[in-house]
Length: 391
Ligand code: CA
Image (cartoon, rainbow, N blue to C red; front, side):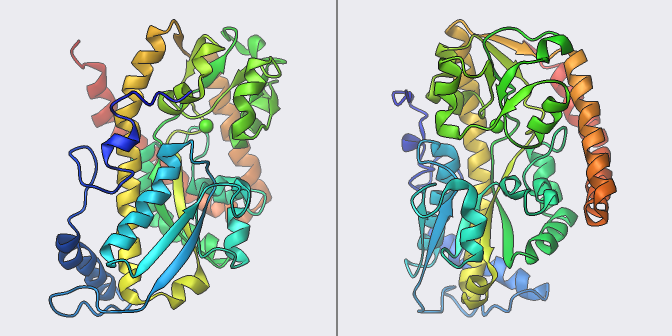
């Protein structure tokens, strides 16, 4: 199933082990201790955030030993995404000289993957690594912390979450007694695997597709019979014909699951997940009890996990896509007719959510302003350049 002979598998990139390599953001502990974490602590203190004694030469002054349990929403087999939690844990341990430890548990070991937020709220774990859009049943605006249809790509999502969006998300999560930190991104996902071609809106009617979240609501409005199937059962559902189509992540993760063996049409883009952010969610009580130096270390570790996960996907996906195509899979864009209809249905979905909830409407308005401005900027500088890339 997994292509472990690939020299770029995570076991050899150093990302999973935390060892510095040319491909990932490595760590020189002493340099980061004196430079990174201390600087982060100092800047936090300067901003009126957490107080931090950056002290003299050695950055870690506290001798307090802290161990947190981390519940991930993902299985170990999704090594890139679960690896984000491992990356976070390794950085924290390294920068604290082993005094602050985080033990990551995959989905199902402490709680099921979709109950991570509940486990943090209950104090069962101090921290989680998850996608906030799993919890839209509690508050539909939580989707903006992860991804929404026709929303932000990974860079835009980061920009928004590290500026005004972060304030909005922290305010939203404070109702749950939780603090969110961006800690990983898959980049734009793929549209998924289709047994037969879908060319127009008629082809969508009655199509059975495994797709979760808001994308499912949009496609449902267009006549698709959507099915929520747990990640681990998706391959079997497509294989035995229980669904006609299934989306997962992107070339690297999809190839490992073997979708290319059972469906030959690989569609793009995954417009429902343009740049999904994975968040490290920390319980407020655990955070309050954490020494200031460890708070700084934790924050630095989330930045590193965030950069590394996206870099890893951006390094692994192109190779996997080449390999998938070489195996006889047709790479197909969704037609303009389908894309336009999905875009308009998404706009209608945001309008109905906004009409139902003034708090959602305020958040959407801020997000939408950033989306429009940012798309103009990216459209001018980034996208136009890609069109003229030489062959
Ligand atoms: Ca997906």
